[in-house]
Image 1: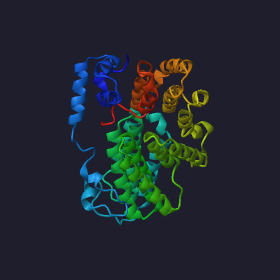
Image 2: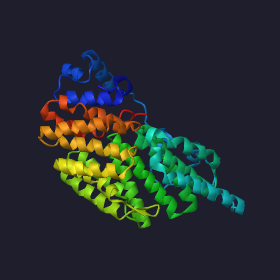
Image 3: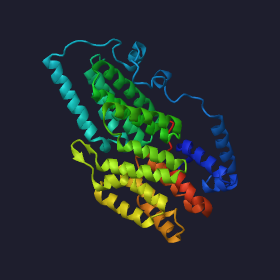
Image 4: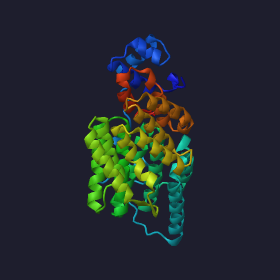
Amino acid sequence: MAFQLTNNLASIRDAISWLLEHGVSTSDTASLLKTNPNYIRQLVFRARRGTGKSLVPAVLSSYDDPAKTPSAGLRAWLGVRPVEDFVVLDSAEKKRLNGLLEATENEGAAFWQGVRFENGIPRYRRLLPLVGYPSHFRRIRLFARLKQLIAETYLHSGRITAALEEGMRSFALSSVAYHESESPHDLEQVGRTARLISQAFLLLADYSNTLRYLNIHARICERIGIAPRPEYFHQLATVHFLNGEDDLARTSFKRAMERLADTVDYGQAKQKHEVLDIGCRQLHLLDGNWEGAQELQHLMVQSLDPSDIHVSISANWTVATAFQTDSSTAQAEAMTLLEAYRPAAAGFVRQATTTELLALAPDLPANLRSAWVRYSLYQHALRRN
């Protein structure tokens, strides 16, 4: 088995807990994971002890209300000047800022190219020194945007705690910029980052904080007169999905698709495969629609570069859908598909983790396979990194 226990302790501990809670014996769990029962017991003991370590610094986690003016202490901790800058920018500074803004947004437009193996992180970090020790809201705004891009890269690559900390930095920085500029643009960025933070909490299975930050996103959207992003409905649907509330999940996944179909980013309308990907793969799984899942996977492969993360995501969900059926033929075909697209998961920690966990499904008791693959879709080895 390709799954390396020593490199994936977080996901292995959770997987062991899941298996034991569902009646799989310690010896059978050890056999499934190609190890010995004593090692299984040791991992369970460590998991019960926990680390007791806070996920992010308290100075960040304590600031979650963008209506409140960030304190001078928080500003200093973030790396911005402790007082507001009232200087009028001259033409040279405006030119420098416009150039830095263009460079930042060019990187943002190429975001997905930088997710695999976190290749985008060095590019974003190279721009950070050009921001300097900012005091004017335009530079603070750029600082926040770069931190947002870093956080989102960590999120999609699988380093969830790193994403959470960088996301909270961006959230606070955008709040600083907003309180100085009073611009709806900066407030919108606060809301966008709140949705990113909620996604990180969702992947940590912290649904209370997920909903808290989703509500911040929704309130900000209402305040500035825009509709919540499609991802807002997708996350709500995912909470329902993970709580076993399948009918509510279906409704929200469909709403996410409707919203995405009406969304334009960087001047481009969303393509068919993007709209279907945000909700249809989940609906196929909920309905056990193996044929529909295969058709969507084919569309994704046709529409995307083989290195795109969504190829791996789609393959994993297609495989999981086969295990929502009673068809041994579909499940055998799914395992062939999983092996074929295993290389596509390389460089995306969360998808690689899911791929390896899905590979265990045929070795589980038949009555656990459906629940196991649903569980596997939201696991990731580096979520505490």
